[in-house]
Length: 253
Image (cartoon, rainbow, N blue to C red; front, side):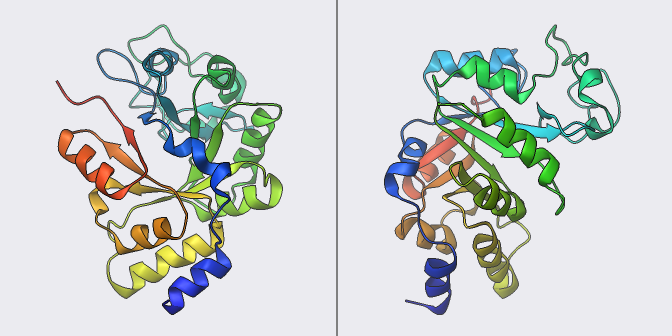
């Protein structure tokens, strides 16, 4: 085994297989089963995923007071009629913001959990770009208290995995990875360093990076590898060849 392989096994050991088995059972609808008139990360998109019998992937951003809202972008501009950073508004004001072209408001994470109620596996991507992850992670942990359904958190930010390992070790945690812009020796070291820092139970890998020696090595030693975002038959074939399950969107019409 290589030195990096030995360090991976020591610093980021593979999880118990039973703990992560739910990740391999069904595909996950990316931001809910949106498209065909349904907006991403909306209640309607989540209901569509439930109707399809698939898992759900969603994103959470922190309001000014730390409350977790189900929303992908840092700014409200693309998906609502409002402008500016979501994180500059308190939860009480965000509750009134409507998704563009819809009667729906932005859902809180607590509402999504009540909607899903354990009927499908749920992946929660924690969106935070710096080392100050505590407010949003704490809000997610609070929302998950007493939740009995299959659920995992994941993030590009290894500090999120580190936080949950320390503060909520029962929650399954993942590291989101892309190799874009991270080639060569420096990129390989960066991926290993993020792995050692986060100590994830699984990886969520960019489908455009397959085949990947890093992903294959982690999968071989027992970390499930999910892959995003699968949008075509070709990408689906790649997912089946290199990953345990896919995070997908409807194919473009």
